Amino acid sequence: MKIRTTEYDLRFLRAALPQMEAYLLSNVVYWPIGVHAPAGEPPYPQLTTGNVLLAELRSQVSATAGQQLMERKNFSQQLEEIRSHWTVAWMKKTRQEFRARLNLWRDYLVEYRENPNANYDRYSYEVSRRVLLELLSIENDQIPPPDLDLLSSLDLIVKEYFRIGEFIWQSEWTPIFPESRFWFLYGFLPANPAI
Image (cartoon, rainbow, N blue to C red; front, side):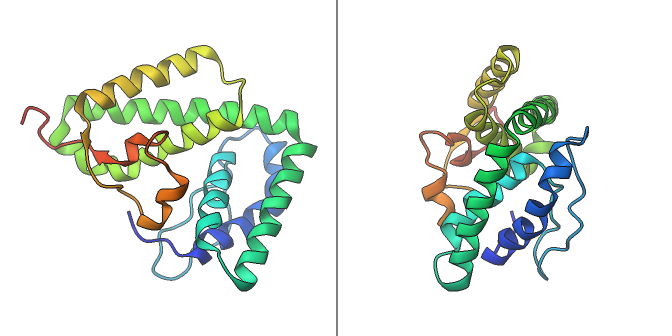
């Protein structure tokens, strides 16, 4: 995973929050964000409730002083106002995104089980879907039980192959992703599970 700076998440939030009302009232799960990432950093994902939650969470750790800290606090307040004002739309969109992310996570794990050697190195990227599923389930207590059951069964598949190791994302993010809840970020899937 490429290193992301504080500006990466703040620029995403600057572009995302003004578009949230239109996004929440739309019928799409993935909304083009229309902004470019800072030079040398990965392209932005599309606007989703999960990606906004993730960017806001990471900015809590990285924005620690001056203008960036004030901006981050302002974004957190704006996000809370959006959630409060558009509660029904927010909850609907988080459920839709949960289902979409769940299907993508399942598809990756099926591909890994079929051919671990060809898919193990995708884990550090693909696991972002599992992180988003966790954030969305924290955000919305109305995720359909069958979706939660599928996620539990997928977790069992991961645990079958998982090798405990170092935190696989940027080390400064460990406080916001505790191992007790985000265990899947503290290790990897091996190229050869039989060894």
